[in-house]
Image (cartoon, rainbow, N blue to C red):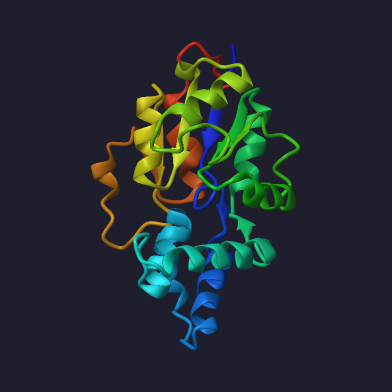
Length: 228
């Protein structure tokens, strides 16, 4: 029997932070403010609108200006979400390797469907992905386990035959709650003070090139050597 390797999207498979940061900086320029350096915005890219608006504008969800800023950010991002976004180097080869071994792979992201699909299609990931679960696919988003459980069910796998890879603590928490081993993508959108070790992931990859070496030992033991 095969296995399913599930990936977070932003900061794990795809480097989408440049387009997210650009949309955040557009909120500043709309207000006559200078753009922030990309390095200030990258670490919160996986936090979506909430994190980017907090850093770019200093607004939290309880502020009266937050919701209009969030909606404008999402509109700006949707208009130009594929300008600079690319797969991380080595991801294409990793996904080809997974398929060559007779294994399946899929995506579980907290980004909502209408923002995810254009980028996934632009990057050519829809052709071979076994499943795509977005932030609005299920009732709950990560760190709740439901999105991962739903992905496994949709692709036809038991959760104990899955591995999840992500660049945020929520990814590790969701995987463990769903009964899946988890790999921390430490090259993703982490803040400088983020302690990946404290996440208690089952393995860690500091570059995309290290992912297979981190994933392979976590696969079900009954897989053939060729598959593993």
